[in-house]
Length: 205
Image (cartoon, rainbow, N blue to C red):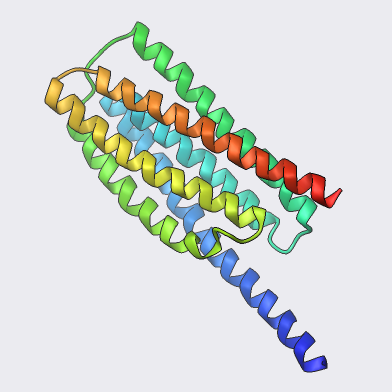
């Protein structure tokens, strides 16, 4: 019986150590992607790149919070997940503001810069998703981290599509269409994370 308990303790500690390593890796990747995409967005004048960069910043904060509550109570993790949902919602609001600004200041972004940044971002987001996938059905903390990474992969594909659209049509509207699609995705994700967090809070109250 004692051996079983010790084994369980060791397994939990090993799991938490693996979670910390994974979150530290994806945190570093998202900080790097935020800097890269922000610079590319400023250079290219792309709304979709800027929205992707803001998403990477929000994700970096999310992973930092996830690191802080590994091993904490279910209620503490639910509270952090609730805050993550608010961060995702904040990213959606920022994207909406950017879209509104671009509609009043039309222009054609530089598709080469969008495409290169999108491909780099997509590659590294794919690595993050692969690292987090084993924990997608875990506690609300790791599940919400996976949700953010899942969004990032779709966001990377969407921004790449924006670059292709700008190149094909020599116009800025494909970039705005993709930014609007990302806005819808952020809103859907925020709803899912917030709902799961509220359910967890009710169950642990």
